[in-house]
Image (cartoon, rainbow, N blue to C red; front, side, top):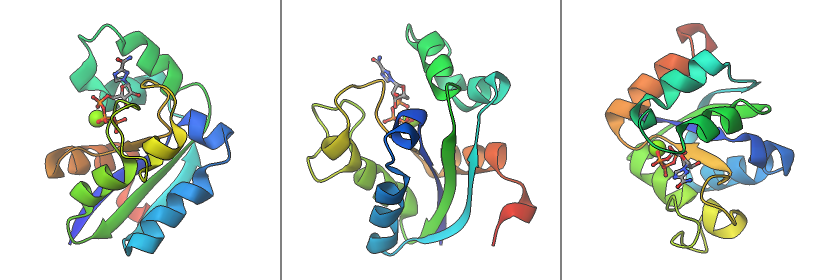
Length: 137
Ligand code: RTP
Ligand code: MG
C-alpha cells in the first residue's frame, strides 16, 4: 500500500475547502492515516520546497505556504501517489481538468488550493518532514 502527502494550502483553508478536499479522497477510497491543522515554519517550508530553491517564485512560494494554517494529511491506498495527483489536477490552473480540485477551485497557478507528492520518493520525504511515527492512526 502506498502513502502520499496531501495538504490543503493556506488559500484552501481560508476558502473553507478542507471538507471538499477530504471528501474527494474519501470518496475515491483512499484511507486517511494522519492529519493535522498547523502553521508551517519558514524552516520547514524551505525544506519542503527545496527542489524549487532556484526558481524565480521560490520566495513567494515560501511566504505563501507560511501565510496561514494548512491542513496536512497522509492518505494510504493502492497507487495513492498517482491518484493524489489526478484528484488535485495539473499545476497550471488552465491545464487542470475541470473535475479536479484545482480545475474546480483554482484561478491562479501559485494559489492552487492543494499540494500532493509527485513521486513515491517525494511522498516518503514529505511525510517524514511533517509527521512523527506517533501521529499515525
Ligand atoms: P505541489 O507541489 O504544490 O503539489 O504542486 P505541483 O507539484 O503541481 O507543482 P510544483 O512544480 O511542485 O510547484 C510547487 C508550487 O509552486 C507554485 N508555483 N508557482 N508562479 C509560478 O509559475 C508557479 N509555478 C508553481 C504552485 O503553488 C505549485 O503548486
Ligand atoms: Mg510539487
